[in-house]
Image (cartoon, rainbow, N blue to C red; front, top):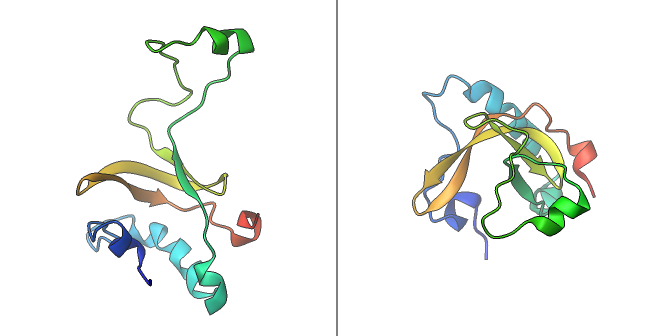
Length: 118
C-alpha cells in the first residue's frame, strides 16, 4: 500500500507552513530528497527525537526505581535533537498532531545522506 507520511499519521501532519519564517532553513533538507534516485526514496530509516541523556554508574542504574528522577543534560524548553539512524541531523520541537505527538522541524543543519547509510 502506498501512503505518504501525512496519510500514515492520519492526515494531521503539517509538512510546510508558509507563514513560518524558518521555512527556508527547514526546507533545505527537502532538496536533498529530490536528488535521490527513485529507487532510493523508499529506503526506510529510523527518525527519533532525543530529549536528552545522562551518564550514570552501574550502581546508580541498579538503584533506579519507579519513583526515581534523573536530571538530563538538556534544559526544559530548548529544542530537541532529531536523529536519523542514530545520527543527529537537526533540531525540533514537540507538537500535538491530532491525538499523536509530532515534531516541528526548527533546522536540518546535519542532513547529509552520505553519513546516514547504515
